[in-house]
Length: 229
Image (cartoon, rainbow, N blue to C red; front, side, top):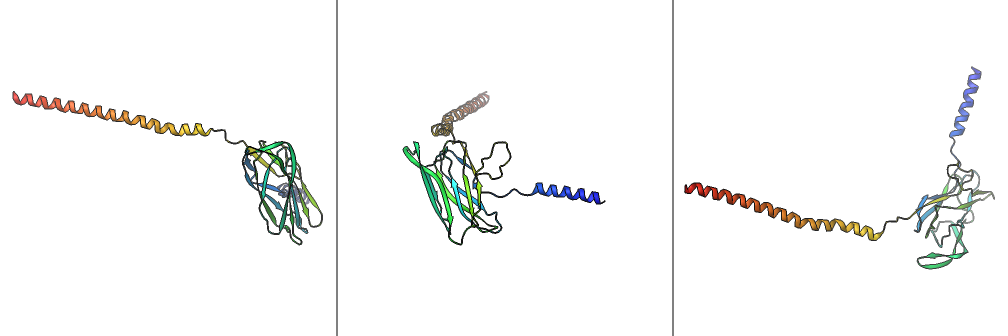
């Protein structure tokens, strides 16, 4: 019985260990957007420490996916700084050439503030135009009040296991390739066919009415002949 209890306990420990949730990490929400457009995103930062607060978040934009415009939303108790870098060749934005793009965004908590243990904070941004790439990987550093730093910088691999410290990833979908003129032509085809069907319908009605008149006239003529005889 003692051996059975030990085996059962080991199995329970293993099962509970496998069922334990993965450590929370910095994420970007939503996790999908459209190439060429603007997106409203929020970097969600949970605090994993039991004793320290998160006092700084640094989000690095990928060098292979330049973004010209980033707007930040005020977050109470935090200041934000946006760093830029020069790119060559320039990025085209609405027909204009832009030689500076956003390199990094840093949020810093006011003295005595921050994300406390058991809490999380979201940092909203609006950015675009989004590049024509399949995804953007935002390597992030989360600094705690005790000096510890969580480095969310590992890029997930397709089909592989999630890294221990994964970076936030934004999947970018291709914009719709449907032509507006084609859509307009498709939309106008139904009214044209309807307008062509109206004369045909009227012609059929007129033909039926004419045949009805001939039938009635024939019956009247036959009735008259019988009366005369």
